[in-house]
Image 1: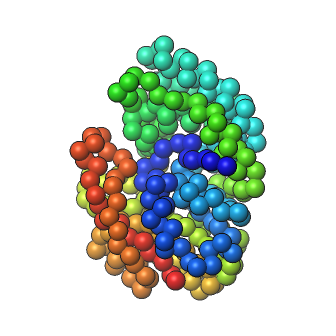
Image 2: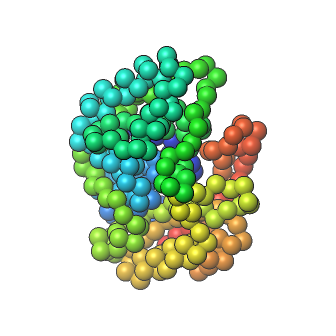
Length: 274
């Protein structure tokens, strides 16, 4: 069954996963898959492991995954309305962004708005201000049209999700679920390459100290015999923090940038404990 990420996410790994596959452990297919910073789920969708637990700290993101799993037709019906109104009302995006931040009673309306705003905002970027409000402006496409309701892919995603478990919590909270037969893919907000690098997905930034904390988490995984792979920026600071683990440097194209000319090849690290 063909499925792909239903949202765009900064640093998404759907295409890059073709490269990352070569660095999976030899016994990957025999391991339970965990991805505690799921975002758009690019790695998961590419691999489509049999047993998976996917989690994130973003409650609206995880709500959207769960709603697609539980009742995808409700999501599709809401998205059809958004798709129709978006193309005839210039102000519709901002009206719905306000509703999204104010809060709605229906979990399916929230999930559909999450997808709608992601499809129509600038560059598919998810960002929150200091109040925890989604604040990305409306985006534009060269044709003036954008596919908001990809019903076939959403239905395929729903079918795949039937066997998947989801959680909304810190990556640390997966520790009790892990054992020596687990594989964990970590895709944290990257250590910045420069002052213009984007690392702020939510109201609280992912700081350098948080990467030291994440290194401690990796040490715990190693101590229990679990195997992990991490993607991160190829900077001297990254190498310093995660020193002691195996590192492979690769060149990748940026997936988020305001201009196509800014999407140049950059260095990334594949970090593993095997």
